[in-house]
Length: 471
Image (cartoon, rainbow, N blue to C red; front, top):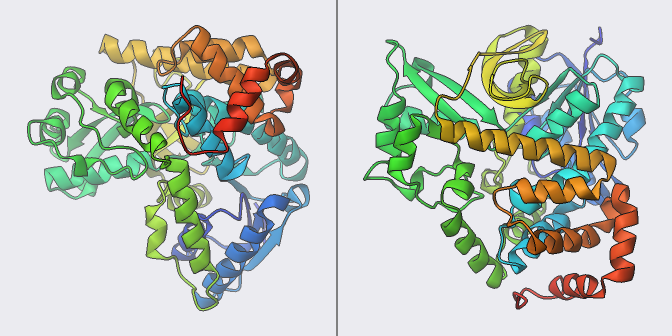
């Protein structure tokens, strides 16, 4: 590591989450000997980078620190001699998310940022970029750690480790943080008195809980959270609908589900709600755009030198603070207990050895040491996670190769996408809609433009209006 202080580079530095990242570093100022923070973005994000960068400088100054905050559009130069690289970018910006949600919903199937067709296309756009970043890192900062919280975090992390060859990669998600908080509140015990084991893949994990006496409290929590007195307020995720799980199903698992399991366990209600939002022109992406616009208006205030409370209204709150803790734990060999996406290495025996999993463990100076989980004794859980991991592996292959057949295969395997004509139709429409960010699929997109005028027309018309097209 740099002898005269740490250099931390954030790719996607113009993100609305950056103030939370800066706050996390400031809170750990005694643990992190930071010399320079570099915020990197693209030309289209220049204005936001300047706004957030100015606020970051105010925050550092208000904390009485002598850190340098550098803003740049030159990623390769920025990476030179970095100790840590964090990634929080969105290829295509929020307009791409709008398409990810609205095109599938126009056909009556789920459109969501990390699940279903939307999640697949976010991966298609993002995976080639993370691999490009890694190629730059191999030259500019070969010893750096990569801390990724760009979604879909699990697939991006797997691509980085398995296909980019960057073993020093850790993927992050804020969802487990909320589950820990809920368990503590329901059991009326401080979280320090509880032991958690999470296992699965990003946005598709389960967890078990024990108290300090060694008694497992998982079933108690299932009763308290998902039993007859189940409350929508127990859903800590601000970005998804609070549909109620079926108690008997969760009882059978003897594991606590991830909030995103709603899309699979109660798919009909979640889809109905998403379609209703779509018809009213209120998809999550459109709400986030409005929230982000308000945040940047706040960030412009030259007197603002701290993270505003409004930032917690974004669905990804706590991501950045978790990233700072991982960096501090690696730097100081703290053995902080966390939940991250990492290489499986046999931690979950039901999944491939070299895939990425999201599990509990401790963060050390040499990386993440996961707690062994073993197998999923519940065949229902085992079957669906193996299906989801097969889908993820196929998505990654399609993203890297630009393989249309693999893309269609991934759509067909995904539980939230009906197979057959509808899968192919949605796939083709989304390829055309995102053509600017999918050079690996250029030949197929050209074929669609030349030979599928209805596909082109459907997408062009849909993106002009908030009204659902008739199908």
